[in-house]
Amino acid sequence: MESFSTRILILAVLLTIFLPEFNGRFKSNAAASAKARPNVLFVLTDDQDLHMDSLSAMPKLQKLLGQGGTTYERHFCTVSLCCPSRVNLLTGRAAHNTNVTDLSPPFGGYPKFVAENLQNNWLPVWLQEAGYDTYYVGKLMNSHSIYTYQDPYVSGLNGSKYVLKAFAFQNIRA
Image (tube, rainbow, N blue to C red; front, top):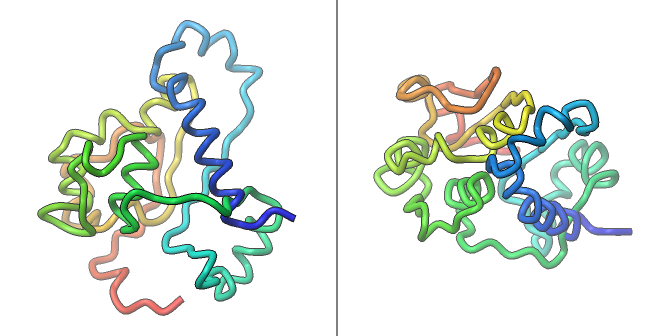
C-alpha cells in the first residue's frame, strides 16, 4: 500500500505536468473540453511529516484522504515553512523566485504574497482560465485575516469560506 508521502509526491508531479495547461496556454481548448473535464478536489494540509508520523494524530484525515488518496514517500520541499511551501505549490515557483520566504510579514504571509503580485498568477486563476469553477475553504495563509482579507480580495475564486478569525492559528493543539 502506498504511504501518504508517496501520494503527495505523485500529486506534485501531476501538478507540475499539468500546470502549463492551466496557465492559459491552451485556452482555445478550454471550452471544447469543458464537458470532458473531471472535477478536481485539491486538499492541502500543513505540517505533515512521515518520519515524525504526524498523521497518527489525525485519524479522520488518514481514513478519509490518506488511505484512499495519494501520498508521496520521497517528496522534499525547498522551504519547510507553511507559507513559502504553500506559495511554491500554488504558483509553481520556488521561494527564492516568489520572495515569500517566511511565515509572516515582512517576508511572508498574505501581505507579502500580494506585495509580490502573486495573487494574479497562481493556480486558482489558471484553473478559471481553463474553464473551472474554484472555491476555497479554510486557511489560505498566515496573515490573511479579518484585517487583510480585502486588501485586495483573493483573485481566481468563485467563492470562499476562509478562516479569518484574528489569532485563529495561535496556540492550537490538533
